[in-house]
Image (cartoon, rainbow, N blue to C red):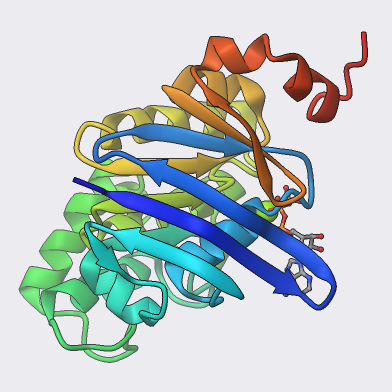
Length: 248
Ligand SMILES: Nc1ncnc2c1ncn2[C@@H]1O[C@H](COP(=O)(O)OP(=O)(O)OP(=O)(O)O)[C@@H](O)[C@H]1O
Ligand SMILES: [Mg+2]
């Protein structure tokens, strides 16, 4: 069964081809990573997969369905969730309320997006608190989200994505701006989540990627230039040249 597949997926911004005729596929249960230098098109690919940008041409198939023109809230209902390179939480609201807003989206089917209305019923609070424990933020549930350290904000956003019960979780730089200690907490969380979720991680920290991913795809100028096991990618000359700037 096809879990996720793109066919000749292309996204142009004027004359710039950010994603260039990309054929990418993913099996259910995989924990994979996409790496590549700044501007390679990684975030644009994620946005096109989530539906916040529609492609210029090409196709996206998710669980056998063509979702190329499916709007983002329907993709969320189908089980695709994403965390963003620049964290998207509700900074003025308490941590628990952030989780509640995300959790009630799934519990009350039919909502088109994260509604800022009632989230404080018993079922929503219970679900939110369970996820807060899982992401190690239960003790900070009453803090204003915007005042959390960066690593905690990133984990809160991961928690909010989990609350929508996804089948596929796309994470755009989940450890960006996090300290080494915070990064380690997030890495452990991702490992734990990978037991039940299919995940794609865009990440610049290569030690994190090598530790987590079973397969790595390397993008450069909108195209895939390599795809393989971590050790294959580490030893790939083209990758070393283009991605690491190693010309030796
Ligand atoms: N909305 C937009 N309008 C015009 N150009 C854009 C837009 N979004 C991205 N781009 C351009 O598309 C290219 C790919 O950008 P993208 O953000 O996908 O790269 P990236 O691989 O995520 O890079 P980084 O590692 O720095 O996050 C870049 O040249 C970027 O400037
Ligand atoms: Mg990016």
